[in-house]
Image (cartoon, rainbow, N blue to C red; front, side, top):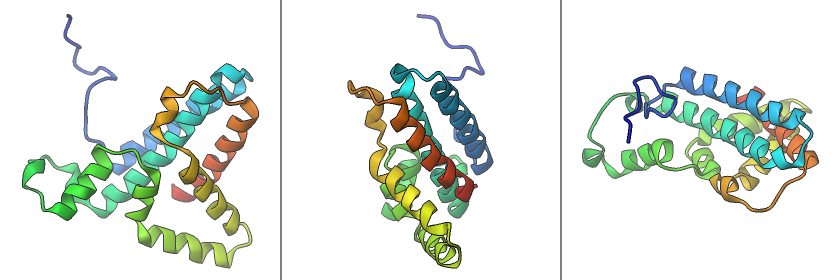
Length: 164
């Protein structure tokens, strides 16, 4: 087996908030590229990538809140609450759990929604995306329609604009 060269896309690295936002933008563009094919066979990939965008953006918010996550450290010596935060960012892909760890973000969104008529749309889109998307989409044998993908991507777009 050949060793991977340095600089491979498969290299494991710890990203900072701005890098996660860059990744989110790229995956959103990828999701849209798949959507634009119009092929139902590409819908699952488009939806998976779009949901991953929200995961990256929520993780960027958590890392901003906990800057220590960007440093190297021995995970085993972390206090239990910090281990949970570490797990959220580096071992889990649960949008609801990520959002739960950001109560200030949820509160800002609710307040923002009260002050703007369009705010409730973002809240509804966030709830929908968080309620639907899981990492298990990548294993699904069900084939979504491109209409479902387009609707999901529009919801993600609305959430993405609010989170960035």
